[in-house]
Amino acid sequence: MIEYETTTECRMTFLRRQLDDPAIEGPCARCDNCAGARFTPTVSGEGTEAARAALAKPGVVIQTRTLWPTGMAALGIELSGKIGGAAAAKPGRALGRLTDLGWGPRLRDLLADEVPDQPLPAPMLDGIVKVLAAWGWSERPVAVVAVGSRSRPYLVTDTAQRIAAIGRLPYLGALDPVDAGEHQAPRGNSAQRLLQVHDAFAIGAELAAAVAAAEGPVLLVDDRVDTGWTMTVAARLLRQAGATAVLPFALALQA
Image (cartoon, rainbow, N blue to C red; front, side, top):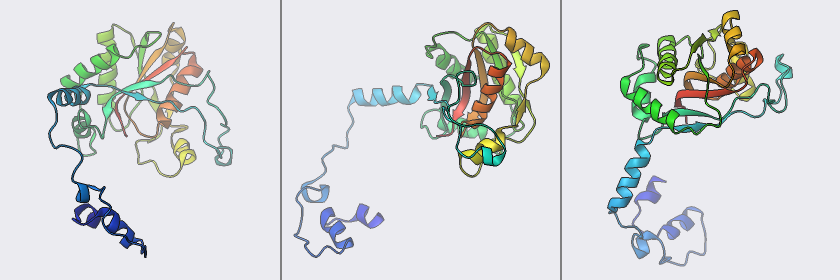
């Protein structure tokens, strides 16, 4: 591939030679080496501004899991088929992807393994406000809950509490982590990853009662979404406790 990228000869000729094609007919007269580059290296002012606006715009959709992985019964977990309406979360939002050019570098710096747990940086709170304002939910959340974190409890709790304060919503508390969970280098297929987090959280009696009393959707806050199974399991717990709907929110989406 490197040779293909750097060759100055006809690219079609190069490829046909690599494939041992006996009928190489000479230059194709169509590739960039034969006919010249088709795209100008300059970018219009309108294109530059559009790209800048797209990179600066916070917020990406978190797609929810709709099916339990096959083979869970063999792992001792009786979950199969569609994730029912009484257990499912709504589509959520994240401030940005870790791979983004816009928020990505700042999120990677905040969530790097060697970086200590810390409160939410102020610029990210401004971005979160913009994401929430542009969400367009059919029913506004009435309360906020955090996903209990072993690695970044301060960051996750601080983020959830700040969102609650800005939105003038009650902060109900956090799910209790009882296992290392998804953030401990998930491995294997979806069934194995769900197995890692299936019993990773518990909901205390006080939080369960508060969730049951909430008359509307609950915003569920975490630091990142990787495979999506942590949010799925956490949302299921809240739905089982009586939440009418769960809206996932995370600082970062893995990809």
